[in-house]
Image (cartoon, rainbow, N blue to C red; front, side, top):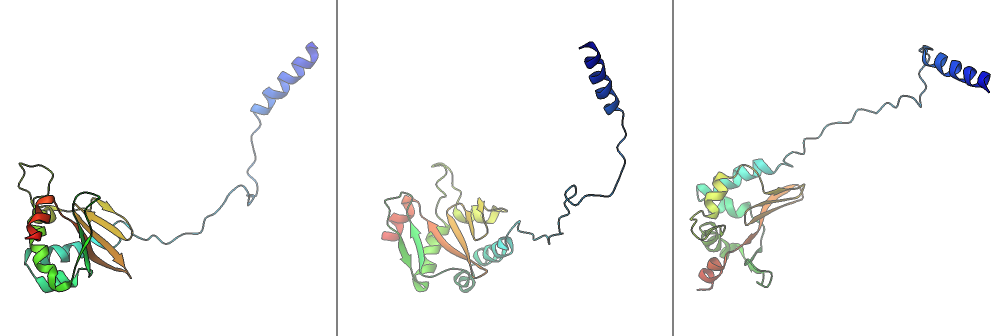
Length: 163
């Protein structure tokens, strides 16, 4: 038994000091990946669109704002029970003027408007391949083109638009 123990110990000790020879590389040992082209999906083309949209709003270029918007344009109030109301291109500019000047609703004492938030915005709250959100504004990408696609009103804006 003692001899078996010494033989086993000698065997394990000798295996630790054996230098592995470099030989031909087995294809199973090294998996080579084909280079893939790197696609910059960091903004999905949204930020150039956003700059164009912001410029149109700041300059109150209503033709350009309408060109960057999907119609009929859906809106909804802040609660799930509020109905979706659709605006035509003709009705849109009046609605958008009221919307863009609404208080953003984040704080009753705050006077920040959607316009103020839009101007300050550098990044989307939620940017995906075909969707982006900035506060109460939703943008969708269809057929590789970004458009302003939906807005959420505060209760005050809903009341103003009903007058």
